[in-house]
Length: 360
Ligand code: NAD
Image (cartoon, rainbow, N blue to C red; front, side, top):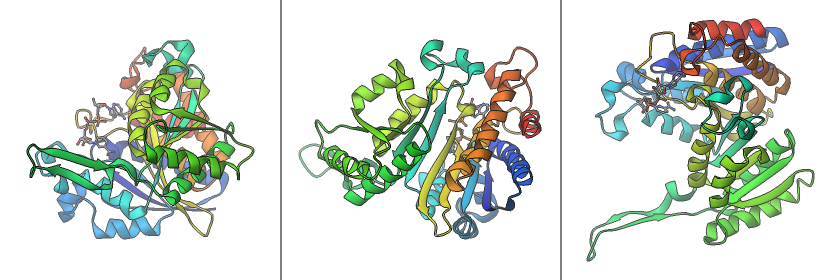
C-alpha cells in the first residue's frame, strides 16, 4: 500500500516526538512492504518565524495532497502575549478546517505498567480500552447567533447549539464502523431529556443503527456518562457524542491513562475514492517548552498517533496492533521517560523510540 503522509513537527517537543514516530513508520513500511511517501512542512511558531503565517499556503497545499497528516505540537512562549488570530495555535484550527476533519477520536487505554499513575483504583482502571468520538465541526462552538449583547438593560450573552441530520448521521457512521472493528458496542451520549439537539441526535443514531445490526447500541445522558467514566470505565467500547460534551468527557477520559504524554488522538474526515480516510493525527499534549530540546519528552503519544493513522486512515489493523504491542512491551521493561516515573535512570525520547523500533 502507498502511505502518503505529511509530517508537521511543529514546535518544542513536537519536533522530538514526531521524529520517533516517523522512525516507527519507516520500520512498519519496511517490514510489511508498504511504500512510504513522507513530506514535511511547517506549522505553528516555526511557520510564523519563517513565513509570518502559522498555517502557510504551502502547508495547506501539501496537507490536502496527503492521505494523512502526522502533527507534533505547536506553541512557543514568545507568542503567548500575541492576539489569538496571530498565535501558533491558530495553525491548528486552520489545518483542521482545511482538511475537513469532523470526527475526533481519543483512544483511552490502560497499561498494566502505568496502573499506579492513574488517580483511580487499579481494579477500576485495569482493562480499560475505549475510544471517545467527539463531533468536531458543529454544536455550540460554531452555532449562530452568538455574541455578547450590550444594548439592553444589562449585558446578555448567547450561544447556539445546532445540529443537522447529516452532521449527526456522518459521525454516527464513523462510530458504528469503529465499533464493528472492535467489541461491537456503541454508547451514544446526549442530553435528550432536556435539549432538542440531543433529541434529534438520538433519533438519527437510532436510524443509522438499523444498518449496523451487529453492533449493540445504548444511550446515556451526559451527566450519567461523566459518572460512569470514573465508576465503571470498562463498560465502554466506542462512545460518541457532540462537540462540547465530547470536549469535556475526553479530558475526563484522558486522566484514566496516567500521563498526558501517553495519549494519541485522531481527527477523521471524508473517505477518499481510494478507500483511505482523510486524517490528522497528533498527540494530545502541547509543545512543553519546559522540557523542549532536552530529549526528555515521552514519545508514546506521538507513536500511538502513528499507530492510529495506520489503523483508521489506512485500515492496517495488523500493523497498528504490532506498534501498540511494541509500545506496551517497552512500558513493561520500565525503560521509560521521566514523566512516567521509572525506578532507575529515565530513558531519553530517542531511546524509547529506538526500543519500539527494535520491538517491531
Ligand atoms: P503541554 O501539554 O505542552 O505541557 C503540560 C505539562 O505536561 C508540562 O509540564 C510538560 O512538560 C508536560 N508534558 C507534555 N507533554 C509531555 C510529554 N510528551 N512528555 C513528558 N511531559 C510532557 O501544555 P502547556 O504547558 O499548557 O502548553 C505549552 C504550549 O503548547 C502552549 O503554547 C500551548 O498553547 C501549546 N499547546 C498546543 C497543543 C497542540 O499543539 N495540540 C495542545 C496543548 C497546548
